Amino acid sequence: MDLELVKKIADAVLYEGYMLYPYRASSVKNRQRFNWGALAPESYSAATKGTEAFSMQTECLLKGDEKTTFDVKVRFLHLVSREIGKLENARDELPEDFADFEVVPSLEVGGHLHHAWQEAVEREVDLPTLKLNQISEIQRFTFPTTRTLEPLPDENGKIVGVIVRTQQEIVGEIESHIHNVVNSDVYKLTVIIKNQTDFENADEQSRDDALNHSLVSTHTILTAKNGEFISLLETPDELSEAVAALENIKTYPVLAGDEGETDCLLSSPIILYDYPQIAAESQGDLFDGGEIDEILTLRIMTLTDDEKREMRSVDDRVRQLLERTENMPEEQLMKMHGGMKGVAKAAKETE
Image (cartoon, rainbow, N blue to C red; front, side, top):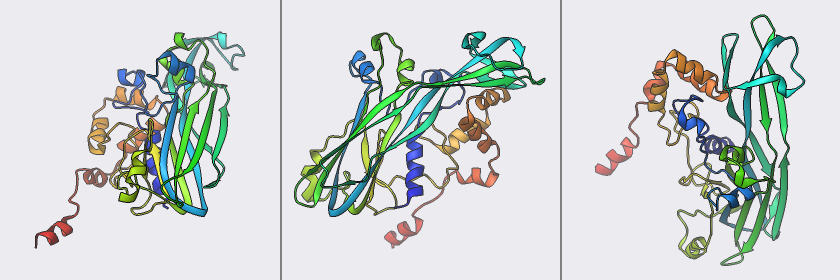
């Protein structure tokens, strides 16, 4: 299994929709954040009558024996609320009281623009290595509430503003269940992810409030040793009935890695084919749905200086995207125009 290849695909899934063109915090589609695979607290899911899911279920088939083991890794983004505070009077030290500053949408300090925004931290939860004779496993996980202050000094070194980053608690649970199906060497694996965060007065809370307590861009990676995952897209005839009985909820499992390998499965909220790959011409993630690197790259190049300045202020990931685009060599840009693939094979078939 090519772990690097699988990670690239998984990261593309993780950051899908993180920031959309025109990559500015002020644009409407970025103020109203949308993410695939968001699992809200159960109470908020109930308050929205199931419009917002609180759980995700993956089911797949694994062929193996007593030597077979498999691992389950759940990955998601944990949002961080970034507020910008403006101090009434410049000072040498940070205020001890959060009430000592005025919350503002943005603030320019020392020639740099700072915007309120939702950042994100990558989270991973691993289950202990499992065997096919283990009927079930339940693992709970918690990421606590945190709050940090970052001073914003002016050109004289005086603190005139502050960045407040707040991360709300997330509590979740991962269930795994194993059942023998069809015959003695084929097993059904079920992995259920639940958001069990305590979210009071859910019916009075906004979606943005709920997202701060949510698992965002949630996906699962399953890897096996001495076993083979069965493709749900190209299933052997003798297993077609078993595959048809699987119930995948809010996620779509596909084989991942190099073509032909069967020891890794990526289950994500985005529909993919078996063995998804990142195009060789792509120089990095553009975060935007259905990415077309050439079009998005050219659009970034047409942004005005003010728009690029605002884009830089979003966060490090978006700033790096802009810098990568601005510094792209001409030959790399030309490669995005497209190429002819499979010409030799097509020519042979016409002989």
